[in-house]
Length: 402
Image 1 (cartoon, rainbow, N blue to C red):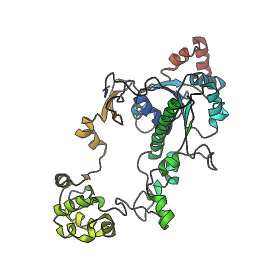
Image 2: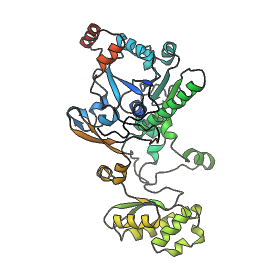
Image 3: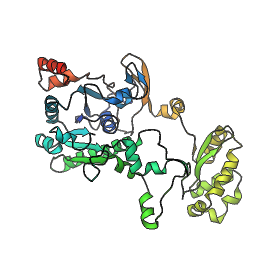
Image 4: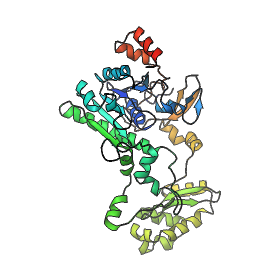
């Protein structure tokens, strides 16, 4: 495995996190915290986190798992059994954070709600990720990322005008929720340090995490009654910014919406008439004539290859790019220069490339120092640390508790 920073101090070293989540949202938050030093104990059902079997599987485990579960320790535990619930209480006794993304009420049913765990450990911070949050009329509904994306407004805006909504292509609702969860946990840690040492609940809803990204959607409706509509590759009200066809059948993404950038762009494509037009000197004027401007740019790009467009725009100081696929990412020198492509070893010794660590901290960077665990790899180690003897552990294995 390639480390991004050998032996580097990390800002979350010394924190103990219990991860009870499955699939994406909760575990994604725990992954980020683990990369910056937290000791994450991932509690999985004896059959394993279902994500272990998602998409492309190598030697019985998803290759996604190599990135999603790195730096974590795996403890198998049936939380429906009293013994499993008791182990969680023991783990919580000296933990800093517990992460769960079950449907609201599940933890309370198991005797593991916030009030019960807070009584055991008053400093505990509990991150709770769910479809609709811990309160409100929809709290008991099951909610996955796709539902959060729909209710949050993202799905309605995704796609071409007049056509059905499309998904982004990744589970963006889940990962946005994981990011909001990390933000909430770090703020709760700061409060705990500054104030009375008490922990608190961090309530993250999938739909709210998506809605928080919806920019002007609600203010425009509230003030003007405007319901924002899907717009394909363009951004209504901001011009020019679009995907423009090239000679080789590819598309160049060009953002010339800054006033000075627009002039440089128009000069480059030999449209001085547009560059000097007073009506196009600012964004409101350009937005009113976006179709005219897009047509001019498209007429220029369609006679050039994508690489020619990229080169000319870059030289002129106009923001430009192409749509990267996985092969483009893997080969790109900028990704490599910033350690955004790491290599990790799978259990059978083969190597797979995985995403690097974000964000980049100059003094206390994150790093990868533990391979994604095999199912239950650390069960005996963790239970032994809790004082549970080997005969009890063997009995629990026989009964399917671990």
